[in-house]
Image 1 (cartoon, one colour):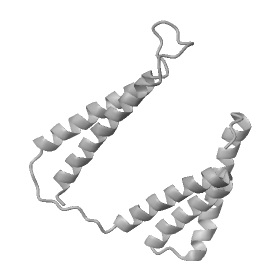
Image 2 (cartoon, one colour):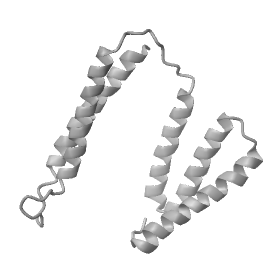
Image 3 (tube, one colour):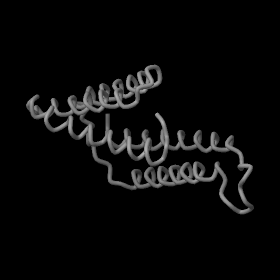
Image 4 (cartoon, helix red, strand yellow):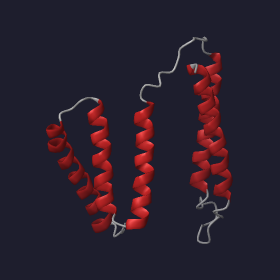
Length: 154
C-alpha cells in the first residue's frame, strides 16, 4: 500500500472517531454544579474532539500539498503490533474478571517487554534482570500514587 494513501486513510478515520467522540460528549450534559460560564463535564472532551478534527484536517491538507512519492509501507512489524493488541485485549479481560490489577499488570508488562526484547534478540537472563526491577518499580509508583495518596482502588 502506498504511504500517502495509508496516511490519508488514517486521518479520515481519526476525523470519524473525533466526530463520534464529540457526539458522545454531548450526552454528558452540562453538569448540575457547574457555575455560569464555567466549563462542564462535556467541555474538555469536546475541546479534544475539536482539536483532533482540526489537526486531522490540517494533516490531510498537508498530505495533499506534498509532492507525490511512491513510497511503500513496510509491514514486517505487523506481527508484533498484532501480538501487542491481542495481549492488551487479554490484559483488560483478565483484569476485569480476575480483579487483581497489580498481578495482571505485572504479567502484562513482563510479556510486552519480553516480546519487544526478543525481537531485538536480547539474552533472556538480561531481560529478567532489567525488566523485573523496572516493572516492580513502576507498579510501586502506581500503588503509592493511586492507592496511598489518591485512595483509588483498582
